Image (cartoon, rainbow, N blue to C red):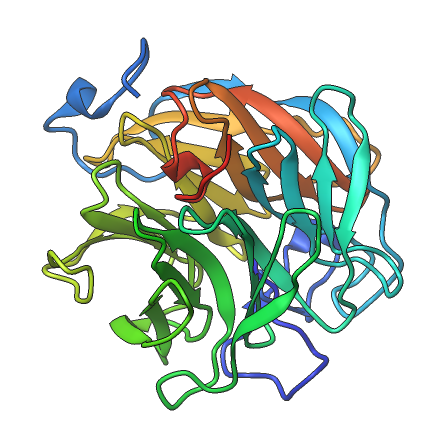
Length: 360
């Protein structure tokens, strides 16, 4: 989930509107080859909008990892992001709305349900967490304009990228890695009427930024396909997920196209993940859903978070499929606190369903 915020620096054009269900109108939000569907299941299926086909998969409550946060710039809600599995088998994530004095990087032991605070940074608005395949460290995108790095235990913290990038401020949102550890980052800016968002590639050490794509409307989620030859990038404010084939050196887009469209009202397409069969899991922020598409645009399934709590719990922001399994984990925020839900994925998890990183 990506939040545009009202603190730190002045508001940028086209900040994300909040979800009506969480009562934040007027507040800016930055908001497999297994049995089951794979790319081969629908070779000629046309692109579809959510709700026009596919099966329904019900997610199940697994653990509460954060309380309802005190009122803040985003209202009285809790928002989570990430998540990614570390080599220790723990599920790491960021608590984007953690109040001052509380950790905003946490780890959940999925066997014991115990939660551990890893890092505390009261001035950061972390919106993604991934493990680099190059060094095994945690990389964090900060919507305030940074990319941070640290060891899984919180030690060795450093800021890898800060300040303007390619002559413009960077609203670092989501991150993916290629096999060599190069970083691919979405710059959450722009609207359909003023499309200024970008996708930027960095070398593994955070240097040599390269513009892959601009002219986007709130680019948000980013994932490689299983062959690492193309990126799936969601545009939050345009309600679509783009398909961006890359050159051999991964430093330019060869021939991009729109993959899938959504119709999310005041919500939008948030983060995404890709399983080993190439299926795209696209989070629908503010709608309590994950849409699962084949690479050809067919809607295969809709993963639904049942609304059984006293208040709306609809901030479905990001997910992970544990590598080597079909065990899916979804982080969910809203008016009751921060939770992890589980679901059965259509395909096996691999590095891409874990952000392209080096997790378990």
